[in-house]
Length: 487
Image (tube, rainbow, N blue to C red; front, side, top):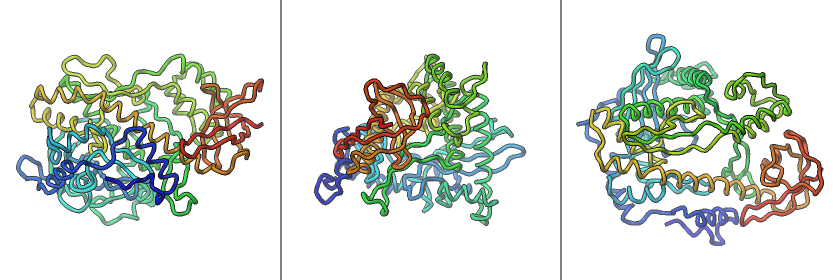
């Protein structure tokens, strides 16, 4: 079990993180029977029988620095005017027995919960960051997708198989981006050295296909909190924009999830990630707000086409894109057997989609992968397997809601501790919108996004307006900050 994070030996902000975990019911540590079973499973040696030998494919992983729970490894090569893409996913099913203690514990968690001070993993570390992770330190069992893509990076054919793989290197997004931008010299001389440039080609083409389909990915600056020795609290709060290589890599995950969804729809059994179309009234409100922020929206242009014209670096773009979030409805999981879901598509992606590429961090993915392997072999799922799929949506929805709440609490707490002692000060801010009787504002220094009260009788503030906000009060225990518009 973890140390008592509420003890005086932990910084006050970490004590607040710990209270948030407890209040949200996030499980901490693993029971002895789960650890014992995981230790035994980690010693398993994957047999060659029943698995295709793909150790000759020079897979690499691409993740944030320091990551150890490596779900995916990739390799791309040119095939005519198209591409041959290999994508290996950690085979959690090899290590986690159905009906065992490790599986039962995973169902109580649903996802891996991340916080700046610690992470509460879906599976015990001996598996999640050890034996099951696609680390470049030896042979690993994996579920391998092989795609043949045309010149437009559209799927021509695909297969999925149980395999043995060996990752050759653990790369970061920054390394991949620098390698590509530097003309392929930084990581030259390796059997996989050409793959990053092909990943860029592939990723940009898949982004173009998304635009053609009417999909919308919003490039919003997200707040994040990270541990750093330079900060007074030991943690720093900032805005984070995705690295270009992260987006290329994400496009490969999306392609794989699309292929998985198509296969399950063909078999009429599985679990999809779905999102209904946006609220038309919300889109119209957003259309009216765009010109006020300086963005022309020509008559007859669709919402997706308009979003793709927005330069994220333009003045007022953060305000505009924050408003765009209001047009979308939440994503959900949908299990089906026989009768297809009424709305099988994910509207933001404008395609059918399933989660299957992060089985070390997301419970549902393991079962989708198991199903895909069975369908590839021509074996329909058993009644027990279908029943398991049907139980996943409520468990996953609850876990992801809890995860989102924890993520928001972490940011709120970091904001509060960053601002502690600065009550009465004023800060420049930009108006993002209005909600629940408050004006939503974004500050750059410190990087805080919060609600601010208006004075009685104060005039309406336009989106994108430059304002001053005064910090009225701070509660470091709850993360509650109170601002008011000062001018």
